[in-house]
Image (cartoon, rainbow, N blue to C red; front, side):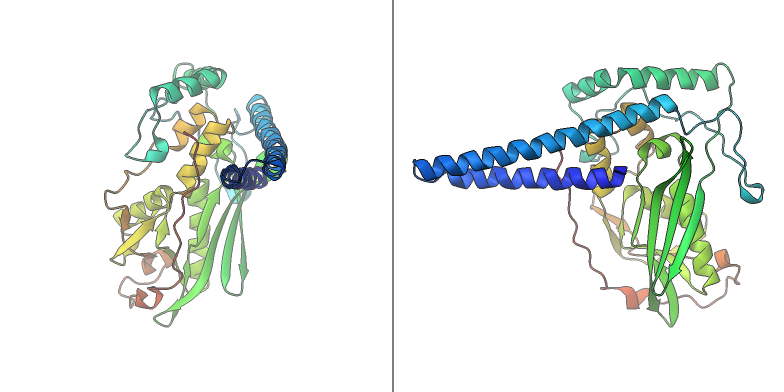
Length: 342
C-alpha cells in the first residue's frame, strides 16, 4: 500500500469511527432494555474492529518510516547523473533548527502546539533528532557534500487536462512522489491551464530535498507554452503554492488578476496529522514548515488568479493580455478542514 492510499484509508477509518461515536450518543438516549444493550454492543464491536484496523495502519506507517530512515535512500555522497547533463542539487541544512519544535508558526492554528504536546513529540522522535543533528554536523563542521536525487518529471496531455508526475529513485525503486493537475479552460479566446491540484506526498523526500513541487510547475508551464496557452495559479491556494506564485510575481514572471483567493488548509492539516501519527518526524515537520507563508489576517490571499506572463513563453512583452473575467465564478470550491487530534 502506498503512502497516499494509507492516508486515505486512515481518513476513512477515522470518519467511520466518528460516525459510530455519534450514533452511540443517540442509542444512549433510548429507554433501558435489551434493545439498547444490543445496539450498544454492536456499536462497541464495530468500533473496536475499526480501531484495530486503524492501529495496524498507523503502525505499518511508522515501520515504513523507520525503514526509510535506516536505508537513507534520498541523500548520496556523489552527485547523481541526470538526463541531458542535468545537475544534481546539493543538500544544505535548513535555516530552521530542525531539532526543536516551535510552539507557534506564522499564525497557523495547524502548526501550533502546547508545551506538553511539543515535549511528547520531541521525546518520541529523539532518535530522528539525534540523526538530524549529526547530518547537519557532517555538512557544516566536516565539510561533507551530500546530494539530492534528480527527480524524473514527466507529463501527460489529454483533451482538456495537463498532468505532471514526479518520480524519485528510492531504495532502488522508481517511486511516484508527486502529481500536478491543470485542466484546460478558455478565456479571452485563448487556452489557459488552471492548476487544480498539486501534491508531493512523499514527505521524507520533500523534507530532505525541497523543490520537487517547483519542478512540476516548471514542466507544466513549459508544456502550456508549447500548446499556445499559459499556466495559471488557481483561486484556491495552499501556503506552499502561494509562496511559489508570489515569487513569480516578484520576479515579474506572473501577473496578479486582482481580487482574492481562498486559503487551502488541507496540506497543513495533513502535515500535522502525519506528525501526530508518527508518519513523519519532528525534524521533517520543521523542515517542511520552516519558511511557511504568514497566515493572512483576512483568511484570503491577494490575487484571485495568478497568470504566468507571455515573456516566459518567449513571446514579446507587448502581447495582448488574457482577459480572466471569463474564469470568474467557475469551479467554486467548498473549503473543508480535516479533523485534527490535539
